[in-house]
Length: 137
Image (cartoon, rainbow, N blue to C red):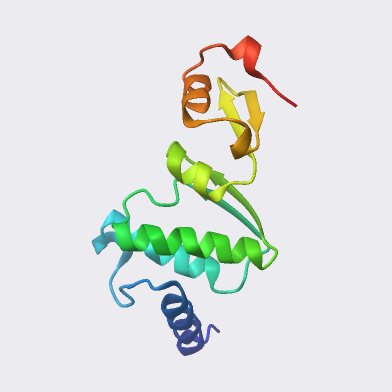
């Protein structure tokens, strides 16, 4: 059987480390999108994952929670976790990434280090423009 007190204690420790406020005793269906997002982030970060695939990490989060979520990804990366961030927020991608891969129509249309490109080029590729000229290896 599950030791719910240990689960809650682990979650609360992660919650404090991340700087999140999580609603522990509410039904998921009663939570807002941002509350659910915070709960999922705390749940997934509790046991030091080795690989994180974060899709639209900060969608629905308030400013403080978004900052904390980004910091959690950086901490995980610095602890040796692999991190794949899927987002359309170019500022977030340029801030957090050491490598950018741009997809359009299911195809890789660009691959860059953030310092090799800018948000305009990446944004242009994301909309399908100049696809045949921009792919880099």
